[in-house]
Length: 181
Image (cartoon, rainbow, N blue to C red):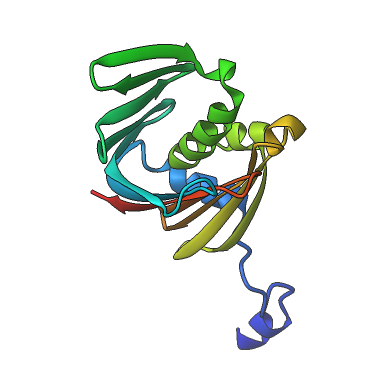
């Protein structure tokens, strides 16, 4: 038996953790809620802007980000419809009419729901690590969008994303730390 393992072509090789495996792992969770803390870094500001709030999603296509501090606002996405709320004001637009927002929403929503098709359609993806600590790097496929959003980097453990870093072409970036509930 030991001899068979020693001469097996797979003996000694580490199992490769790839996009398909990561998406299957993430797709196991059909809905979830989390709290977040985000720091936005901008070259036009003296210091980062920090916000806190809640995230929720429900497969296949619902995602909500509710910011509680520094001011109350929310972004709710259902399919291709985005509703923005700030105080008593509300506005609904089609997601594909705002491509720079769509690429960020699709990165987060596609990852949360394990939607491999959405990730493949919108991004060039690279995966590193393994189930107990992974990183997903997403670069927009569309050249025009890459002039706005360079990369979305998502780190997580098992089926739970824990940190999302959005890097913009102008050097601005945001880091969101996620705590599952």
